[in-house]
Image 1 (cartoon, helix red, strand yellow):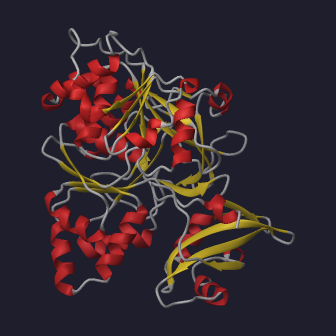
Image 2 (tube, helix red, strand yellow):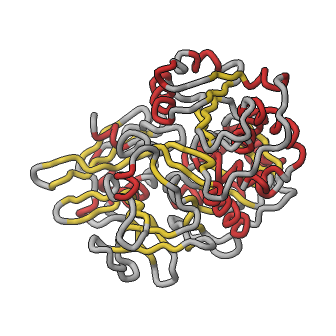
Length: 476
């Protein structure tokens, strides 16, 4: 992994200086964790590569994190070194107490003046730890996921083949860099190909304009929804200009949450671009993708990527028939090594055949295309003797003209087992009722799938990647 990234020569000299400062006279960090808090940009890339070049395991922190969130990750990861930009260093100063095993806090802006080492550090083994990313915490406290150099290389090489990454690509990057989507799929994918990356904070109008100089754009459904909202509210001349800017794209992808078919169609109508939806997880890299060349099925996540095997199985681990729901279980060279400090959770995440238990429910049609029905734990609602997909109900309700956003959960109920509850963010000036939604949805859903309760909200709770945190809805 590192050898390929270091081959992009412009980064090498500064990376070596930073790596020498991290090693502090040692030949290598030997896989020890290094946590760093940097804003998106070139300095973030330099520090990331320096940690790898020093033989360390990179633990990216997010400027979006609150103090308790930073403290949780630092305590769990126990890094030997903390690195921060000058603007972020004060946020980490109180987290380097000796009791936490931290030896140094380094300010990245000052490291260029530090002496370099004698020669290059040895390249780490392929199985050595390269990166630790924390899960989204949608079903519990975030877990540190250890990824080796080999696993990361397998991910970006698979995507390079599937998505036709090129050296002349220009990636417009608006995603957080402490999750696999923004860091591995987007940034490392571009670095691996030798492509250009432009970082910018998300602003709908700014992104529309910046697409004119991009060939690749990666986002989550929430970002596409905000782009469409801005487009629909713009005057005809601005819409035409933005549509023209988007025509420079050769690839627009969506991940980290399910992309509603209505949103795919709205973006296609506005720009002529069909978003490519894919599926992956921090633990398994990227597993499924709609094709680069070929039909992209709305509401589906496609077929296996190169080198990946995905089975859909019932509760006994047996393969399901075409169209029958089951859990996705995965074999892949992109697989994580372990959950940090939790051997029991690591072992429990694999079945007897060595497949990773994703906890996601889906179906595969006769052509091999996979559709997700949601997280087995929270998106599969057991109501009135039926197993219902929250994602299917959400997709139907999103078509209602008064609904801007919606999440569907099951709430404990003595009659139904779980009562289908819709949590709706209405469009400005509108206030749909439960009866409105039920009447509308009857043309799209079977009667037993209709929402039985409605809660109107100003916004849905989301994490940094735009995933709705449904456990927070259930606690209301």
